[in-house]
Amino acid sequence: MRRRPLAAALALAFGATTLTVFVLVGSFLYVALEKQIKAQDNLDIVLAARHARRLAEELDSAPSIREHSERLTSVVLGNEALSMEVFDPDGKRAIEHNIAAALAVPDAASGAATIAALPPLTRVAATARITEADIGDWTSRDGAPIRGIFTDARLRNGDTASLLVARNMSDRWLLLDRYRDKLTLAGVAGVVLAMLLGYLLIRAALRPLRDIAASASLVTVNRLDTRIAVARVPSELEALVASLNAMLERVEQGFQHLSRFTADLAHDMRTPLSNMRGAAEVALARPRSVDEYEALLASNLEECDRLSRMIESVLFLARAEHPQFVKQLREFDAGQELTHIAEYFEGIADDANVRLRVSGTAAVTADLELFRRAVSNLLANAIRYTPPGGEIVLDAGASADAVRVSVANPGQPIPAEHLERIFDRFYRVDPSRSSLPSAGLSQGSTGSTGLGLAIVRAIMELHCGSVHAESDARGTRFVLRFPRVR
Image (cartoon, rainbow, N blue to C red):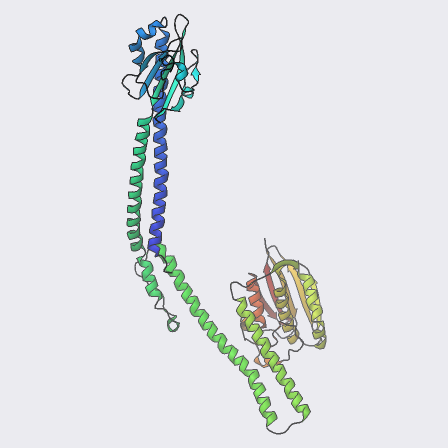
């Protein structure tokens, strides 16, 4: 399925945003106008009702209501939407003006309109103040919305007349409907215009990205030194170009590193294969005894073990460099685990006439299996290079920001120029030591494949920690630094 262009997607998003803004603003304006109109109409109804009641209270008796009808109806004159009805003390309609269809209708029996024919409204007492809360809403027989106030008025002779001041809201509904239609039309036109202009502007703004893509397409395996160079790139994209160029530089360095690693791996794998081939050719040169053939097979088996450890170590390093490498972090006692590892290596240490000593304790949060593998590699390396009668010390300690685990052994010091490179893959300070036996090492130790310390560094990087080596005349000390998890 063809994906939607970015310019179109951004234009649609911009249009949707504009539509949302128009809807919100239009709704606000519509509601504000509706409230303002309602407030103005309420004020007109209240003032008209108050004025009409005050005029009615100046009348002497019920007959005076009809005599002064023009005076009373003057309250609603000039506004065709306003209506008025005045009922005498007997509940019969005495005055009507601009009566809407929803107001009092003639009684079927008497033929005269009465209060009983009015909609159910709350009547305001003659002594009560008329407020907006007294306004009632109802619908006329023809469906027109009506708002009004029904109030009593005390005449001078003590009789009580009733007044109904109402307003037909149909014109207001029509006004609001027209206003809403105009807002809708303006909103649709604005959204279409915003999408069109947005698409054109976004497409022009994305041109530097197309230039960057064209420049990046020139980078190939044979041209990893090519860098993206885009003239007049916007300041917002300068960081992107710099990041891409930095990424290409890392890719180039990684490719070179992989090339060197492949060459070193091929060289180290060729050595045991050459040993096996040479031994086989010598054995086949003439008939041999059974013991000689057994010795040959045992030698080849050792070389096969060495190749297997090398392959397993290379696979581990490849997995460790993957960003989705899974670690099972947990908190445990580093001193207790060092004791377990020392007990596991006790037989190998006895064969090498080397003593193991564990000291210190500290709580560390790490992957237990990776922790054991890192310490086992260091301990196997220490046993291999510790002179007979020497003592290897495994120590655990904690500081405010990290937990440190060290493996120290006596022996010849490592030259300073080799201390950092000993953690590189297939790097050996003394190549002649590559043939040292590795039988009895724990699973996961690399013997003399040149990958043991590289695995240790990879494990520490997985834990966001570090490893370094210290070496002097007293011996060599490897220190693992695990950061504290807060």
